[in-house]
Length: 120
Image 1 (cartoon, rainbow, N blue to C red):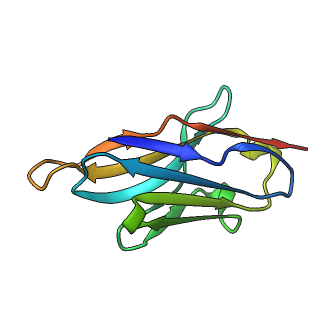
Image 2 (cartoon, rainbow, N blue to C red):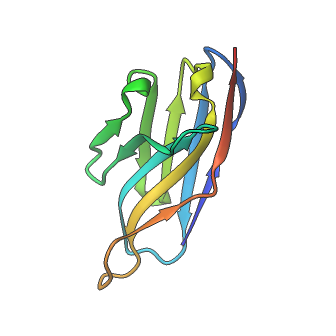
């Protein structure tokens, strides 16, 4: 199983970026998909997550600015980031909790990370 993230880059404060992450490999089902971020010198934190029933969870700092969504037919999760701030600068990691086979337990997988830099 591989998670491949795209869409990071450099943007000015107030701008927008859209991240995407595709899950590939042998997959039976994907439960939760989401995004975490890690800024220099800080711990990794949850940014947003979405379940199979489209129930979402957001960090307080991004509520109203970021939107997480998923396309199950493509095994892909998206993060639309609007009104970006310099404090949003971090490496963003996609995450998926999935079952590879019907008879296996759920496991957690991580993407390689994509850098988002917001200049002031």
